[in-house]
Length: 203
Image (tube, rainbow, N blue to C red):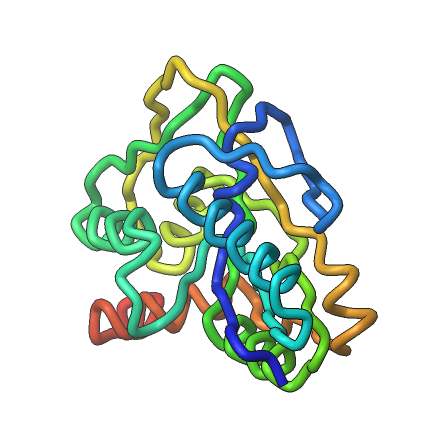
């Protein structure tokens, strides 16, 4: 079993500029900002520890952005639900390379992946995600549809590039037998119900 399990994330690739970046474990890190750099440095420290102490085993798991009931992140999901419940305009971002794409990862799928990695005795790195990219605009559209909201969706232009990272989970599927099970639309429906105390269509 692993000695240390470190939860890293897609942010180690946040410095890339792409339309759709499928990130496997072989993709060189390119962190942007202090948070991404900190995650990357922690990964390097574990690798160095393994070189110094060969019996030391670790697991590194890189997730896409996590979501689910009980979490207030990503904040935009809860903000969109609140705006949709009032019928207010939902403002999403559009970057220089288009709408930002992310690989939303449900917390239940994340837990199942962590459990499998904990039982693996070899030091390894796993990129874990749904493998599907979704834009914030698409999330807003799903939420307004589920809530039967009259909210209008608009875009705010951002003079930066979005990395648009989607995690390639091929290694986790082949080595650990892991598979994502969550359906984004169904899970958003559950979050809406938990947030509003009503069914997705106000019932």
